[in-house]
Length: 246
Image 1 (cartoon, rainbow, N blue to C red):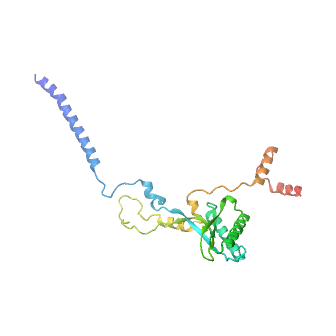
Image 2: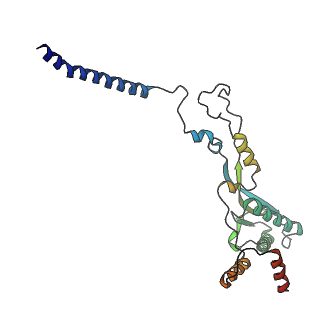
Image 3: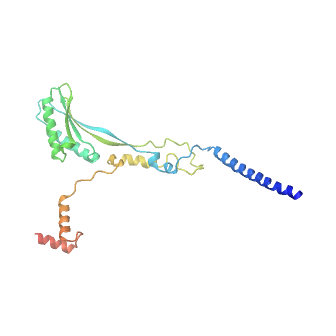
């Protein structure tokens, strides 16, 4: 009878031990889930390290304007005004890379309306002669009064706004526990890039491709059709080809 009592208590003891083990496991999970982070919420590591995310460069479009004062008795643009139009167009190509069109605005209702319209047409032809197409130019009128309302040339240029550095020194750089970059890390490099970039539009994406060289492409296609090598030839062969062509 004593052995039967021992055998009966065996499964009961086993169940009690198993229940204690499960209770301890659940207690550790609950305590781990309730634990708070005294340093604040955790952020993904790449956003802490990448300066582009911590200190972004803001790229926006702002108008660039050239005002030309046209006299009511003038006959188109003066030589100095023509030079200013060419300089403005060159600056547009250098800084904007053809990302927006040039708008020529002539005054309407002013005393110099007639001469301004003539000057606007001359400016349009001048820009066309420098390589602009009809689709990249626009001529419009704006309501004005007075005697010498200006003729305006404008386009939208990209501007890079640099981040402000040295604003956040809330962390003690000599005592960090998370081993993460400090708030101002990488800001100076981002600011220098925004100030020095020649065309801020490059920060948004690659530029469009320029037109192909039709002569070179046709020459390579003829070589391909005739079975000739497409690679560069030796210096001696190049000189021979030049002499034979003469």
